Image (cartoon, rainbow, N blue to C red):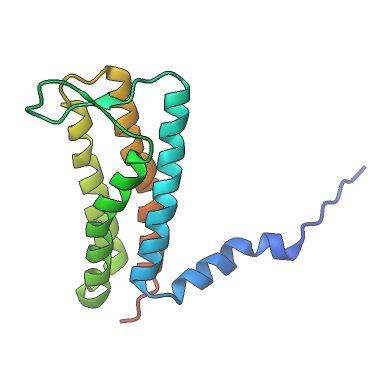
Length: 156
């Protein structure tokens, strides 16, 4: 007995259409869209951690006590720090010989370095430190591939 399945071609071609759409948009726009998506996904991750009972209080180096991380704080953090990544992507699209590779290597290295912040956050519980570190990876997993994909379509 043979089972044959057919897929709707429009569903099957969706990733290619989205990729094609993003490939024709300005780098800054793809960066903006990726940043918004990364912020939303990261905030949803943080909300799930809150719901699981992780205390969302962290302190900066030198602080005497931890301060609450407000709802929306993860989204805002992603927006704030992603500006540098989008500026980097725009600059690399203009001047780099291999912008996608350069962007990926640079941003992955910066993401790894960013993990030091949560690791050394004083007066912050281990569970909160873990959520903060994973949130960096979540944001990077959304934003870096989208921008690197766009940069791979830069004409030289």
